[in-house]
Length: 390
Image (cartoon, rainbow, N blue to C red):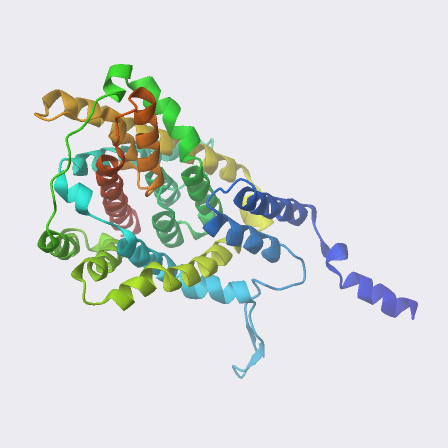
């Protein structure tokens, strides 16, 4: 009887729990707290937090691989998170479906009404490439153990685009996926805290007070033609970026064409919500103690913050330069929206603008570079995949 009780105790998670697993369960609970109490990207941080808790429960087997006998018959099935990760994240399926849903929710109108904002979206991607160089130098100096592929995956955090960061990390550095995803979504949630100090430091009160002219009306034909043209051009010149931008533009075309409202509604709501749940659980499965509790994770979090900050600064500085040469006034604050945290970055630009001038409504103007930033981050991801992965 005593032996049976002892065996039962040995089978409990309490007996098998290691110190690292306990820490990661606490990390998962922290993510859940930030999602519920603070409202930080709750749609992703909540399932990621739950996924982190589940994968670190000893003996539960959420990430256990299926076992087969010599004849090829399954002896034991794999765990839930094993199938979610390998079926949806390792293949890139979930990020691409998310991108389609984001496309269905995106209005290209502000960007088409002011095409110059494409330059702001491009400038904000400078943070990605600067951080890649920084990560490579850290690896070369022996400070961090980062390869070129690791550096490329880390740099994408600077685009403030969670699905893109996950897509690239799953291709180039799957062992870093958990830390990269947590960093990307954490900094997206912290946009209202990170960006304003940078925006104020790089602009004067007069620049922040600049009022921009009303945007022109964009026709339905323009909105239909644009995603088709972008898909074809990207596929021809940068095929590695075609999966991300192709799905993004497909979702947008469903929105704008007006003949598949049911499909557009599904992509914007039911489908993207379902996939978001599985994406979060899959990312959480990579937050095991072995993969997360190391010095590289601290480096990823630090470099991610640097990437995001440089991207914000580059967008603002580009807008300042454009304002000097533009025939119409450009408020430098909208440059900060060039990072692709849609629509939060645009809202932050509008908020800081209103602080300087109560009549200064920049939201629609900032949505142009904000949407351009989504395109820019996808193109940057394609460049990374083509150069490093190829």
